[in-house]
Image 1: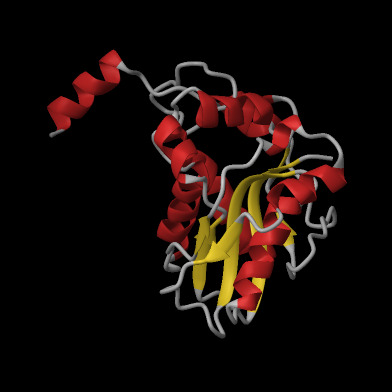
Image 2 (image 1 turned 120 degrees about the horizontal axis):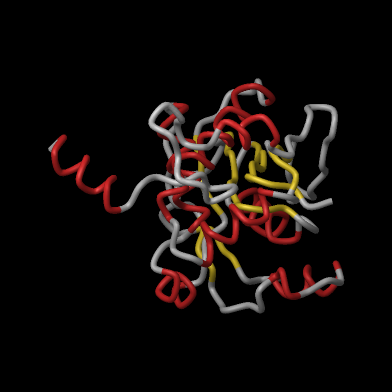
Length: 216
């Protein structure tokens, strides 16, 4: 197994998600420079999202974070979920001190998932669950295809775009549960608000949002 891993890393050396540089053997997950210069948010810089008790993000969506998200979502770099989800798990542990029963995510539509080959929010949520010991389970589904939110600038249009596009899974056990809802980026908060509303309508006790990055 170690030989196979060494061969794989020789052919596909691990790269920093943020700058794309091949990592040195002593660098874990991201390069030393990016580790020092990431556009980190502070606990005082809060973001309100309707229906969520908090919205936590370790990074601002700028500089290297933009490129990391693009590699992860659009260039097939699904392996970066380990590092990116790790940053999110650290943020959750440091800034959210309420009990959590369940981690879930804002899902892609079935068509978009087939096209991409994976659901980026799901991989992040499962990594957060793995590192925190909190169960990460599906609780929502997207019921219709929508325009990509990043292509819409007007906030009212963003809300209209996702209105009614999600619902709680019929067999999801969320009643009374304290839930962390994961997505990759929060911009207007429309997607998270719609998903939070579905979870609360299904009986969730509380919902806190957690994203990798926050747009200003």
